[in-house]
Length: 87
Image (cartoon, rainbow, N blue to C red; front, side, top):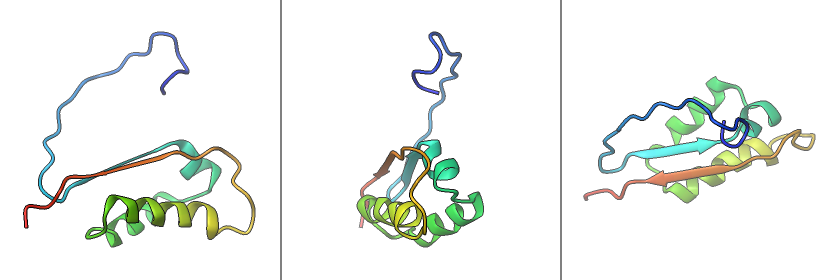
């Protein structure tokens, strides 16, 4: 929760990313505001395994915004990072 608490407790950890790995970060506007269910999110991300970071972000945006009949109920921020492939 960035910015919500003046002195939040956070733990630090290290993750080693390998060739082709992706990191996807998003605000609760994706899950709460857009009503995207965790299972649907996991399925979409699994189907994007070979996509670029931009293509993953586009797919998430489409799921959250364009596939809904009503407007978002919250703001939405996405950050997708992809480690370049070795091939």
